Amino acid sequence: MREMKTMKQLSAFLSALVLLAMVPALSLAQEYPRRDSSMVFTPSNPNLIQKTSYEPFQNAWGVDIMLSTFGFGAGGFYRHEFSDLLSGFVQLAVSDVKDDGEVEYINPYNGQSYTPYKINRLLLIPVTFGVQYRLFRDDIVDNFRPYISAGLGPSMIFVSPYSNPEVITLPEGTFTYYNQIDFFTSLKKGQLRYTLGGYIGAGAYFGIEKGSLTGISVRYYFVPYQPGIESLQGTRIKRFGGFFITLNFGSLY
Image (tube, rainbow, N blue to C red; front, top):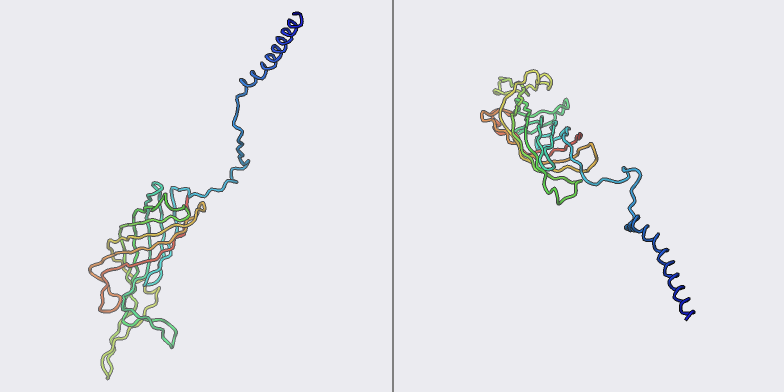
């Protein structure tokens, strides 16, 4: 009986030790709750994270290089972004205008070019106010941003003399001689004609480099002028414009 009593006392003592040992562990568990074992690494320099999406800017400006069936042109633009999809713009362009019947020759004696029966040089100067809408915003990666655009505004046609026709009478008959006028001398004698025009087009911007803008577009300009203007003698042009391929280079800010 004495041995059994001793065993019970020893068992109670051991149970008390176990409970005393568990008290600190329970206290630590309550003080420091269990955490997720996953680890997240954050770079010390945030610039180490490469951004692959296009960040819209409020404004952009730049230059246009234009190519048409008539030759080259140039211009400038200013654009303001209202949202990720919609932008407004104003553009100014200058391009050469020629009659479809014009054929340019090279004088073998002096190396100068000339166009028979041409009496006027024509320059088209449209000022366009319009909108640009981005396409497929959520379907295409940001380094290729297609869009459609349309605009309307006043257009000017600069008319300057190309040659001075002179009628020459010879025994063989009467001939008309076209005395070509120097380009800069011609500009001093130029006059402006005014009308209304516009264009519709489509294009895309490339790249996501911060601060720069590069793109290409196709535009169709429609600029009617009902009185018509002679480029070749006896032929009046009443519809100016046509298709243009335009390269865009600019800055974002």
